[in-house]
Length: 353
Image (cartoon, rainbow, N blue to C red):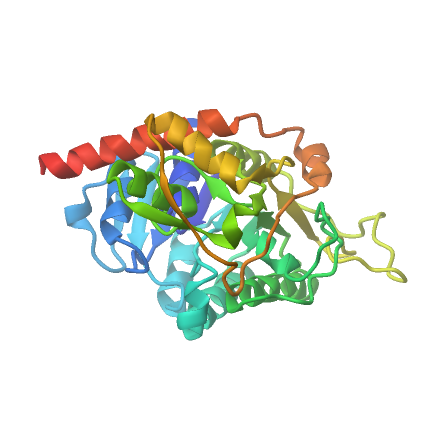
């Protein structure tokens, strides 16, 4: 049974990945600092859904529940992080822990350096000290920045980030390559494209739209609704990650040309993939799907484009499809209904309390 560390396991994607890997006969250890970027109660509810008694959570205390464990730990705590690596001897690491959010990076840029730069460096140092078979780490579609060369391909220029969040994710890609070069750590970076689904973060558009409609309140739609996103259902995302884990990159990739280097390939054990749906959806169609799932109209306030936002994201994901033999299959209507059903269930539980 392979042992996997998931950082950010109390987060949206981490929670779904943990459930899938346990069902797929992996031994899972999850790490999260349970910070207050958004309501920690949602993070605790996700951990409860994984079978943990959240009253027992204490800093640097490992809780074990059959084949899944959890530890509250901050990635900036290198000493305890290395101790965890030494004790557990992981086969795979999936680094999902990060300070998220484009708009929040305008208000608090230092938090992105702490979590996304220092924290990721500590993951790399731990993998160096206690070698793993494969490090998979979360990058982001936001690294494409000013590029309008759509659909985005992994080899597009990513030198023009629009906010600190994107800059930190670009830095992660370069840091991982340097450790693949220096210490032979097999690294795969995944540029996520607008993940959505049940248990999603409250700062994400789907949660904001749904909450406002349920409460019969107005909500803002930016760039007057003239935006599109390559929305990807979380279940399809974690299935892709699961399939990728036993397929680390190899050194001396014959597709890498050092005279014409591209960012997604290397002669070292390193690679980058877009991970998305390959099917952009107009933002207003997304809003209408929420209206359909709830059976009511939303009170929309149209606003201009926000700083740090882009008008469209669209992933070319052929490289990942070919590598793992899997394509996302969940429709927007199916995915939004699943989110709405879970949202209403969680809100009902709150009211009962």
